[in-house]
Image (tube, one colour):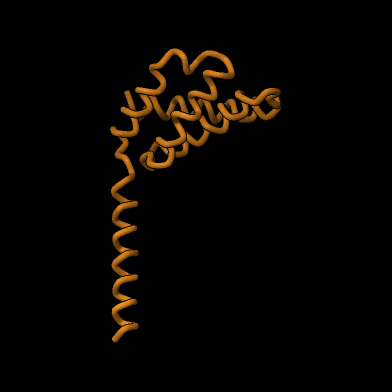
Amino acid sequence: MKKLATALIAAGLVVSATACTASNQLTTAETCERIQSVVSNPANNAGKTGMNRLANQIRPIHEVASDDLKPALESILEYTDEQAKETPDEGKIAELQAGYEEAGSTYQKFCS
């Protein structure tokens, strides 16, 4: 009986955790609203400091972003992380540029 109770409690905790995780994901509209609040700040576009600020503000959104926008945010984070380095790898930036531009198109598609 004790094992059954333990198993039921464990199963309940797993179901509760799953329910909480699922409810934390944003809708596409909610993701767009959060992204808009970040990109509308002009300080996020100014040099390495701005790239760091932008990336740090997008990271928590990326964690809960809608499935439609999560890949675009990942591309933005990769690009901004490389740009914000003390000595960015120009070759890597060139490789990431296409994904960054595509992320902008994806954002426009879902958030306009």
